[in-house]
Image 1 (cartoon, rainbow, N blue to C red):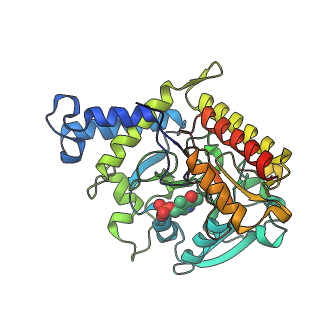
Image 2 (tube, helix red, strand yellow; image 1 turned 120 degrees about the vertical axis):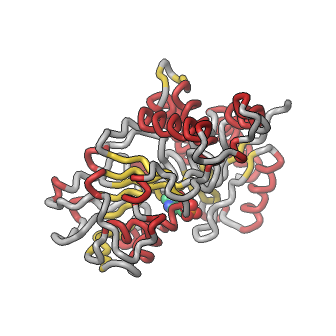
Length: 373
Ligand SMILES: *Cc1c(COP(=O)(O)O)cnc(C)c1O
């Protein structure tokens, strides 16, 4: 088979080729069961084994402590924007740290269920930087504090999670880690709940991951749908209703791929984190040295996963932008168009993107600059 194109989609995004090949091999007959995973009862022993293995592998990879529950849900990040306040707000105060499009959207949705306060807003403090936690105006009575730990559209990432207790706040921290889950470790001592859709860095769309501290279960508002009540879902081992079985299966294969992943003398999450760092450094260095392209995010909060970039100054014309995308596609570099709300270009370089893929992109950036700069 010839090499597949490099796919820089923000999501649904590229999956490891090895995993896709394994899915293909097992498509018609999973481990001699005579069934595709798609055709299995979610309550049968085959699927229960798949699901338990996926959960155990995820717990190991992300070092999730035993007082956290792992829930496999549906509805994506956008549904969680409602499900979190339904479960944790008690109809009272919730504080949001807005660093880009996704956290802004989360705050907007929560207003339907809770008294929302914007404790910090990156767009007010000059573009492209995360306001220092010391400047956040957290309220004493807040039920939780929400932030998006990697802003997929704006390309901002928290490289350390805030210590709310050090800021005088006892409330749990909720993080939307949709677009960088499993790209690096999580400091669970600072987190009450983390959620994310699978389609960026885990597997196929349809699965939503929720990791929640046990003491936060059982607080849902009466209007919360049962299928979205974390306590109900936890008690039913994520099988209160039919879970997204095929997505869980593929996610499980991705977890196994990550566990055996080797790079730079390391293995597992440490190895993938190192490769992610190397990929991001390679790409940002090329952009910073370019006379034609630029990234506009402050260095200390640049995302390792999503790299928005723009044509500089006089180069920023619709014709050159289109030429870039057309030539990229001809070179098998796919889905580099920026999100429509910000324009420009964006390279999403999730776990499944190889170093070769980023080298190919950087070579193209240099070549494009030679011809059009
Ligand atoms: C993609 C994304 C979402 C939305 O996810 P859906 O699955 O489409 O609901 C939410 N938050 C972040 C950070 C995202 O990247």
